[in-house]
Length: 230
View 1 (tube, one colour):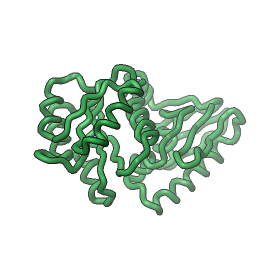
View 2: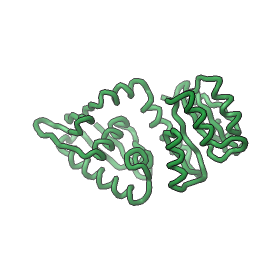
View 3: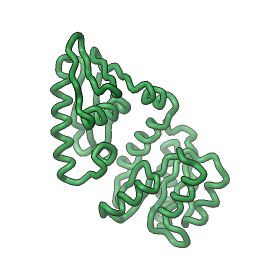
View 4: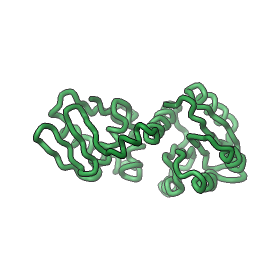
């Protein structure tokens, strides 16, 4: 999925920036590093980027301003913010500026890679066609996102909006890990403790709905998230 994805990394910490560039290049991301928002925008204007990873606090031009400028010319390129700020208001500000994800420092390289992979799956044309259909086969189950129904044989389960949203994310990432924080931000809008507990309840409900097909499993991946197997 990451092969030949031209990636713009804008990070003013030289040590972290070089480390990230080396790591991403090693994972197949063709990464250009810039160290301030102005240089980042000049690089972006040259075109061809399929992914932008932006630090928030930067000299000359901050990441939020840079994201707004990028969004004026490209509504679709995925944008991920890297920041030391963890306040709810900062996350909301990031998503309001068109972010696809918001990662708080310090973070693990594995976490960053999983989040990037999840974002690229969503914007990949093949995955996009599946989302447009909004109909999924999960083992013997048939999931209709628009009608919020999960059907097996003659048994049709009506889902709530959050159940349907969460199940669609799981289907989009089927047989791969759905990052916990990513799901919380996408479905609940915030990854705080109370929403996290609420999501656990919804996962338990989905697991109960899916138990009629032994070939389908919804498993916890410790410290990471969930995986829908079929």
